[in-house]
Amino acid sequence: MKTGDLVAMLATGAGSVQPNQAARRYASAIAWGFLGAALLMAVLLGPRRDFAQAVLLPMFWIKLGFAASLAAAGLLAAMCLSRPGRSLAWVPGAVSAPVLAMWVLAAIVLARADPARRAVLFLGETAQSCPLLIALLAMPVFVAVVWAMKGLAPTRLRLAGAAAGLLSGAVGAVAYSVHCPEMQAPFIAFWYLLGMLIPTAAGAVLGPRLLRW
Amino acid sequence: MSVPEGRLRELLKRGLAGDASAYRAFLEALSGNLRAFLRKRLSRLPDEVEDLVQESLLAVHNQRHTYDAAQPLTAWVYAIARYKLVDFLRRRSREDLLNDPLDDEIDLLAGSDDEAAEARRDLAKLLGSLPDRQRLPIVHVKIEGLSVADTARCTGLSESAVKVGIHRGLRALAARMRGES
Image 1 (cartoon, chains in turn cyan, brown):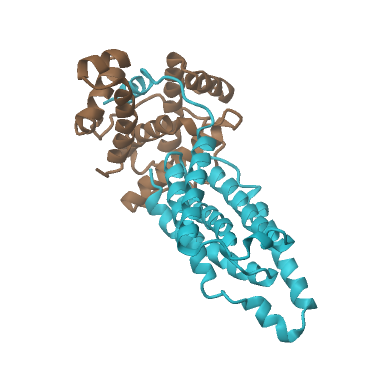
Image 2 (tube, chains in turn brown, orange; image 1 turned 90 degrees about the vertical axis):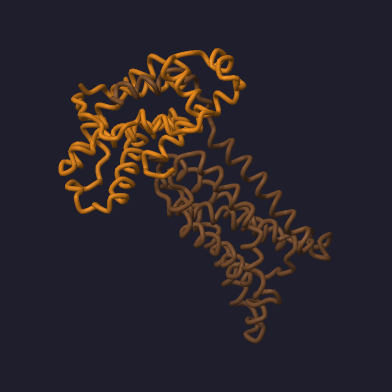
């Protein structure tokens, strides 16, 4: 087939294209992914026993806000990386701002604490399970976000996979924070971040294979 | 002959809104740009250029919903062409044959080359290898120019199955161009 014939074939009956498909795909991916993560959390873990009191404490919302702002940053990154030729200028700042803010808060808490209590503030009671459970809750979100990306056109597959992983890890962490009893900034600054970095690393590894087009 | 970016962008915008002749003019002009861009970068593999022009055109078409009208067209087209070129070179593991560094998007829409060589890959044959539910909608609607409704009538498929068949068929065609089945 000559290139001119291909052009004619592609143009014939091409019809109009719906605008904003990226936003719509991501909206449904996040809605379904979050639903999946919330169901997994409810079935496997359940909300923390003192949930009704916890929502009255600022630290509960700081923890949730940390995860939610990283989810927003991951969404920004994923959407930029899903379309060819998009600038990533805002992405490093958006991703690092919540992390830096949480690290500053953690440093202040540790600096003020009695040295004997620092290890407890850092390790809490659930350090061993927290990152793995966040990664587990991220799985349904990851599947949904990869579906959204595959319908678009990522050209930097490793980075796009990492962004999908960060977004799903952060949404998983939002769901996990309803269960998690930990309320100390040093714990969240390290173990929550680690939990989000597991799917990020997995996404970077899987991206080139999953997202090719 | 090179079409200025502003004009090309206008053609694409009208094409995305459903104007088939503007869309065709866009693809025709773009194939000249892609040919010049790829010929310059694949001067040691001149026989592969036309295949890659076709693969890039199909990619632009299949991913056209990712173009945002507020975005410069050069950046979007360049990212697609570059992705297809790098993917092609990786497939052949001949990245050392790239004789020009891929760092400059500026010249993509600046040059144009209308002298199409023969494509080596037989697209008609690849099209023939698609399953009927994808091949027939493409043949009737996109090659013979029938309407979706008429195609639905003569194939016995529903209208939405015809549309889905075209969409999935063109994506499957792109996968076959890469050598995947």
